[in-house]
Length: 266
Image (cartoon, rainbow, N blue to C red; front, side, top):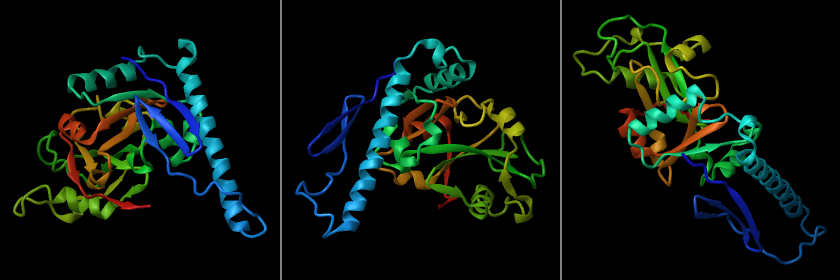
């Protein structure tokens, strides 16, 4: 496996991020005419704030480039058992769109826009996470592999969204036909404990990926993600500092994910 470095290039028109030999142009930052602070202090303050923000993004990119070139002992390597399991699952599923990227140790200290820049994403809506949800009212009926009535579900959603408990309960209940549906009282979804998360996924906090988890845990893919353009997302890669990018269709086919409406905007 190879990790391609992310580099930053500045020009008079703005900033371009070069990721895997593709150019992602940022919006041009307005007119190049001199600005009179006396005439428009608000605009001057806004531009100053933007300049500081770009400095932070550039620093993050430089740190990320540095992290990709340090000695193997300074960052986790592919021999990490969690990473090896995730990578093996992705390879076995023939996910040809998959891209792996190590990020710097301060990644989670960045805001979403800065994280998107580090990964080369078009926007923050491409950044996803995986949350293990437990049905506290689980009745234990049926097969352990019954996707319509499981105790645990792994939900993939955008960082810009939040799980809507009522939607989740309603949509999972509706996976069965009208005659076979369980009573609404049989559903009460809550975030699973860290202990259960480790047991069901096998990954530590901030490292959970849907690949290589317990096969009895159904994967739910929030339908809102289907609206992202391009249809490509980033998520955990089996280690806190490793991210996996993958085409949405590849992901759904590889994981047999249930695509339903379970989120709301933050």
